Image 1 (cartoon, rainbow, N blue to C red):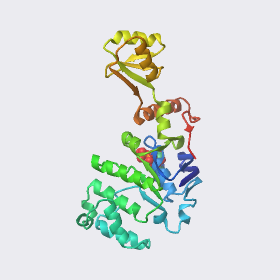
Image 2 (cartoon, helix red, strand yellow; image 1 turned 90 degrees about the vertical axis):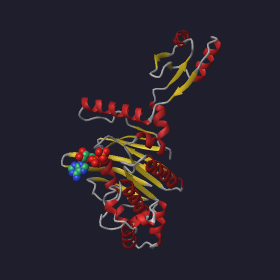
Image 3 (tube, rainbow, N blue to C red; image 1 turned 180 degrees about the vertical axis):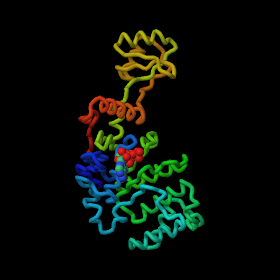
Image 4 (cartoon, helix red, strand yellow; image 1 turned 30 degrees about the horizontal axis):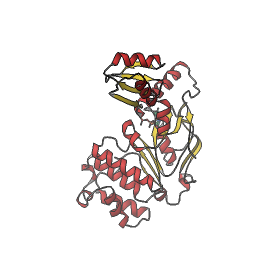
Length: 316
Ligand SMILES: Nc1ncnc2c1ncn2[C@@H]1O[C@H](COP(=O)(O)OP(=O)(O)OP(=O)(O)O)[C@@H](O)[C@H]1O
């Protein structure tokens, strides 16, 4: 578990992280979201003791990072996949890390296999590595100490579809083993598939700490896509029943108000044939974009905001 209490980091008179409090729980993947410059990387650096907070604290498994006796066995991280000495081979890099952290050498082979770096690739100097190979090596380093907590900043950045799917499956399986997995990503569609829980920040402050499904459901512009060969009659019936009806870009009507079941009943009662009846949910990207836009508008209008969209609905 990662716990952050009133964490604050100021650079000059500007707070990059501002009284941030949240917990990242084990057994699920938690996504970390926020616009550029929101403070995600700074928060991760503070958790890892790479930077000193101006106020507040961050705990990993109930301890401050500096008090961990074997940090690599408590938390694995990937903040910058290029932070590897290019003149060394992947294997030498991992062997060096293992030796300096008192880990058995066989663990190097285990993690190389786990991340799919074959022996020939592992023997090559990392400066010739593709982005995907570099990410795999970064993840191998993070997994070397078999840690309970994993924290990754933009792990799918620049990866191809295969690499992205691989990371998704790996993160989900690590969480299923009971580990704490915390990752940031700008790829919303991917995060929606990978994470079950979300921490969202804006300007260093907490905007939401919520299960993914709940966040999308609560903010979705709920509606039902409905089509009939008798389009105009369908519209009239829907409006008569109090639905707000608009033309959908894909054809048919988007009806807001009555549920899909109610619309089905209505059509039956009016002897109207339907060719489509689909409840429509927003994507994470749609919901998140709308939330950030409204937070930004609010903030543009008032200098000292009161976290307009902030919400918290965590399951203990
Ligand atoms: N060493 C530093 N000195 C001064 N300002 C900094 C420093 N590090 C970060 N900042 C500022 O703190 C704010 C938060 O930056 P941070 O990199 O944590 O955001 P982020 O959410 O990770 O952004 P991105 O999504 O673009 O990676 C930014 O305004 C950034 O310019």
